[in-house]
Length: 401
Image (tube, rainbow, N blue to C red; front, side):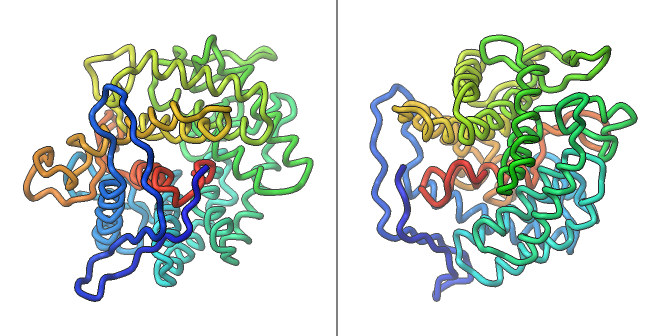
């Protein structure tokens, strides 16, 4: 894998904007595949600069809270004082920005957000893995931040204590919307974050719990030939799927991401399953802006699912003997999203309105307070897109996101 010898973002002396500087970074290879040209390195960097400027605008809207979502291409942010399951992604976005800028102010911002997540340690929900892998562990991993390191350790211990040997996994839990039956449910949403968070510890018992959970995901949610259910419930001593396999695009993408993380840790059989799941994605979703649900092709699309799927493919590219086709495919998918109307500023002809702020990724299908699915801008969607861009320029490792 290629490594960057120097990556930095800092204010230009001539302006107040944020500029990304790539030092001694070789140009990526070209491809003759029959797709529109891939985003060039300059375009990738421009997109990152737009997204970092966008963060400052969002921060001015949330006033110390956590941004949940903003409908469509508006700037009407729904703000949460505690962050719900998405709070960690707001911190993660700032950790990622700090990784690029080298700014101590950005790092302090991320660390402050991290501290504000501490109240979620005791919540009975496996969604804590999303909160603390992204919101805390990245700070410990990239910066050895003391607050992040301490919170990561507490989160790992708390999640491991939620392991249920009867069902051989860490269940969804009753908190954060899990409901009264949450302790009998397993989901793919947190597959990757749980693998990464527990893998952050060197304790053998935590590694055992992590692998038990991965094996139960395969038992409960794998249908056939790379196709996955997104949720299963335990009854009469067996897990039974609760949805149609492979239909929910983001559910399939979550499974792909989790399998790539398990494959990086343990190899087989997870590597074979990861390849099969990624191949199924390519077969079932040939277009980069897939429907939220395959069984509702006229419904909303969900570009955010493609971003997560692309991150899984970028991870897979590092695990197989010739990963170049997977990397190229992921690059093609991210190119299509950044050049689509769901990302503003890079291509002004695709911007929904001249008044729309640049750097906005509003391609996340999300159930809003009105109880209906809508396309929104979100901290988690924007973090994943920015992470994919960073992987493509070599600024971070694929398995860090």
